[in-house]
Length: 349
Image 1 (cartoon, rainbow, N blue to C red):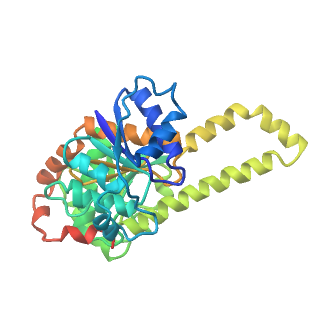
Image 2 (image 1 turned 135 degrees about the horizontal axis):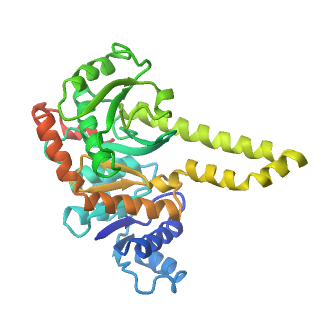
Image 3 (image 1 turned 90 degrees about the vertical axis):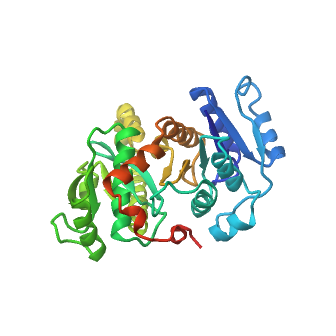
C-alpha cells in the first residue's frame, strides 16, 4: 500500500505534514510517498532520523506549489510539476493507491478530475466528511466541492454516501436524509423539494426524508446530503461553535479559586470531552466519485490529523470504494450517466 502525500499543503507544512507521514508509516506499516521539493523534505526528515529508521518514506520530486489564493483549474493546468498534480498523477498511473493533501481544496478537486478522472457514470465528485453527533457520527456530503447542484447530483451523493457509510464507516443500513429547513415533506427550496421526490424513488438507499440541522447533531441520520455551499457553511459553523463552547467553558472553569478546584477535580471528564470533540481523528474529507482515493485534510491539520487522513485513504483503497460506488450508481440510478451534465462544471475556476 502506497499513499502519496502532498508535503507542501496546509498551514503547518511541511513540518507537521511530514511528522504525520512518519506516524502513519509507523502505525499502519505502509509506504507514504513524500511529494514536494527534495531538499526541504530531506531537511525535515533529518529532524526525525531515529524515528524514520526502517520506514518506507520515498521522496517524489515536485518543484511547484499550488498556493491557497490561486484559481484552482488554472493553477493545475499551469503547474504540472506541483505537489498536488504529481501526487494525483501517481494515483492515475497506479503508483499510489491514494493521495492526501492539506492544501488548496479546489486544486485537489481540479487535479483529481484532470489526473485521476471520475468514476464512470458520476456527474459530480463530492466532498464527504464524518460529523460527530450525540449518538456517534454521521457523514455529510457535499461539504465544499459543488456550490450549485441539481436534484440528480444529490441523488448520486446519496448513493455514494450510502456506499461510503456502509463499507468504510461500518453502518449496516445507513439512514439517508436531505438537509432542509423543516422535517416535513414539502419543506425547503425548489432544489430540496425536487431532490426529495427523486431520492424517495431511488432504489438501494434507505431514504427517510428531510432533516433539520438541529436533528443532525442528535444523530437522526447516518448520511446527510446537501449542496456544497450549504454543507460547507453548516460544518464550519458547527466547528466554530464547538470551539467557542470549549473556550468559554475553560474561561469559566478558571475564573476563580473555587471553580478552578472544580476544574481540577473534573480533569478526567474534561479530557474525555476534548477527545470527543477533537475532529483530527476524522483525518479529512474524501472526494467521492473520483476513480482513486483523494483525501483533503483541513488546512490547519497537524501531525495527528495527517496520520488519520492517510488512514482514511488507506481504508478506502482497501475497501475498493470506487468499484462499490460505480456498482451502486449503475444499480440504483442507471440513467445518471445519460443526464448529459458536463463534468467540467465541477471544476472550480
